[in-house]
Image (cartoon, rainbow, N blue to C red; front, side):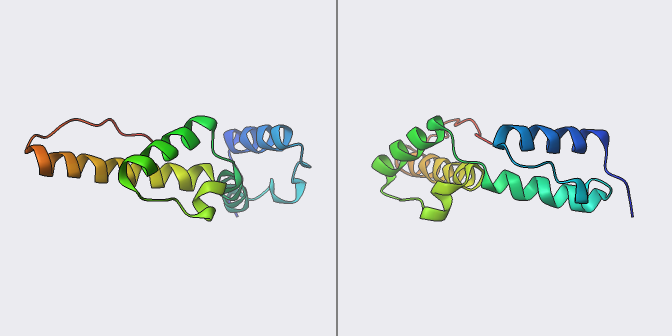
Length: 106
């Protein structure tokens, strides 16, 4: 069993404080358990107001609607937005024949 990194412990401590949840003492000796906990928490993070605004604008322009599951997770909504921006770019290229740069949003 590999020990977690100092950075993992810092991230876990920060997430626990921000969400006002107990520090998970039972996982802090195992690298893989720490990694899994951090990824799980990342999926639970709510989308930002900016993500909601962008999703709303893309929905109005493209007619595609994110799922309820995507609207609950910052990570999932971010992926949905990136996919919609790619569709928007492809649509513009199709109609204009011009490749227009659209920056990536991670």
